[in-house]
Length: 142
Image (cartoon, rainbow, N blue to C red; front, side, top):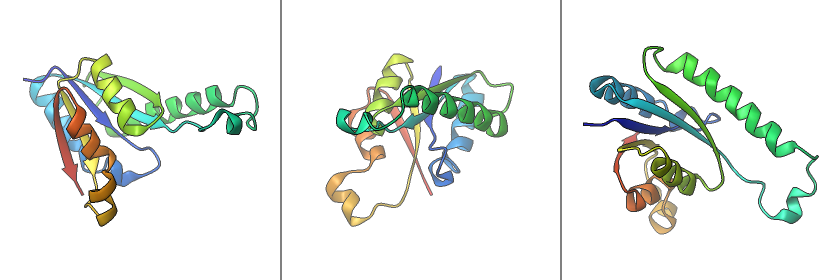
């Protein structure tokens, strides 16, 4: 049923993937699908702020996250699965949606916490992904 599955992880917060990774692995194994593991690095923001960082800072950060993602995958994803490592940069939900299209994913697996009042008003990343994705989205709660 699924050929390409995108799963998102925040390497700094275990709660973002603790429940979602096992679900994504089971789906990938069940359908012999490729697993696209995505982490998103936030942008520095305004160009005025960016000028205070040393030259080449952004590349160093992206390289470091790429190394961390490879380490994460080797520790948490079975080696017999086909895996693509993706480090995106920008607003989390926008990067998830962009990468889902770019990789032709037919399923996005994303972790979500229990909603608080502010989430009902603003909408968390998972809710935005669900609303705007062109493919199926499986939201895995804590």
